[in-house]
Image (cartoon, rainbow, N blue to C red; front, side, top):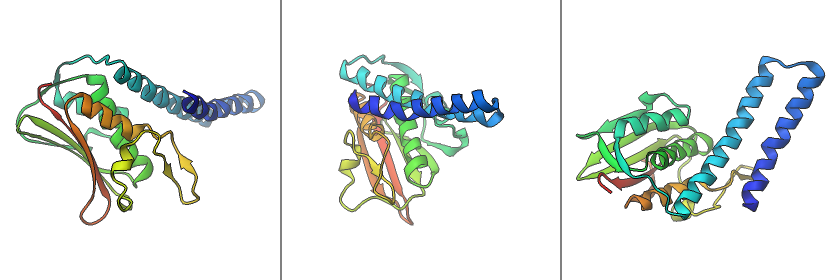
Amino acid sequence: LAAVSHELRTPLARLRMISEIARDTGPTTKTYDDLDREVEEMDALVGQLLASSRLDFGVLTMRELSLRDVVARATERANLAIDVAQVEGEGDRLTGDPTLLQRAIANLLDNAKKHAGGVETLRVVIRDQKVSFEVLDRGPGLPEGGEAALFQKFQRKTDDHGTSEGLGLGLALVKRIAQAHGGTVWARQRDGGGAVFGFEVSVKA
């Protein structure tokens, strides 16, 4: 909670500054764009915290879902076009918590957008009563020997200046959501450059 509270102070401070400037000079289209961006950042952070709390207390709503609907909603949440997704295999049904599964996919997409040069493909494969979700990114690849640590809570990325980025909950939540659905996570180097982050769940929980 202390870490989340600290992270919320930054967008709140920017909102106050945007509001003060708008009072002095009048609102513009950029004002509303800036407001939207800060609200989206806070909404994403609160969403991560709520998802984590649901997992802590075991509050999952398991029901039969349309796989393609889950993927469509997750790409929308990540502000990406649905055509970034490629679905392979037969079938469209799986059992799971729709909100948490969408959150896990969206977190992988957001991770690629923010830290790995963007999303090239979201690959969804249905095979042997399992569904896997993989995001192929365009980044520099994985740190040597550090794949497992990427899915640990509060494991933050750092920029070229050594400054920490984000809260470090995104990939940790992917792991916890996958495990809650009887699945696993992975990260590996991608042939030709970049990395692949993914998770797998059972079609039937």
